[in-house]
Image (cartoon, rainbow, N blue to C red; front, top):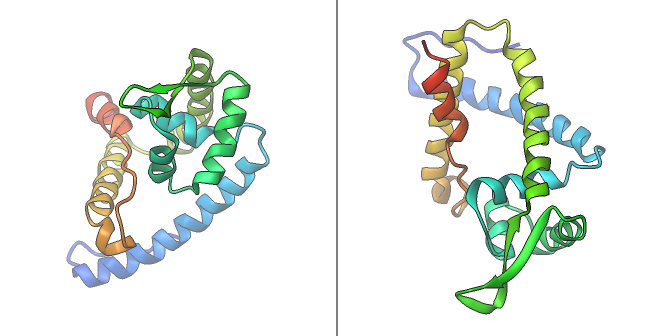
Length: 176
């Protein structure tokens, strides 16, 4: 059950309630991620999403962006390359390295995964008033921006930022 905070709550009161809700959210996301690991395409989603949304990346940059170990990323990339979802080509700036990019089939697979996720979320949010959906996306994006901006203090180093594609779409189309 969600905690309520009054409109006059102090920042400390709001932080306490938000921290509790974030812990609850993380448990729910962990359960969702655990279930997606059982899905044959579960390991592909994150790497394909970064390659589609950010463009070609080196494996080391991809590992840093996704907060995954380089050995994990290398293993998953090898599988994605073998299945034709990711292409590997020499890095023009450093011929010793390789740039990874989503292949046309990889983009299609990413779009399929994203569509499945979005359909599930849309079913969940369907009963919400449009203004609540708009505010949720706006405020969640703001929270993520603040986390990214303060990542050195909060997490001991920078974290990968995700382009605000969904936020922009909601702000343009949803808030009428």
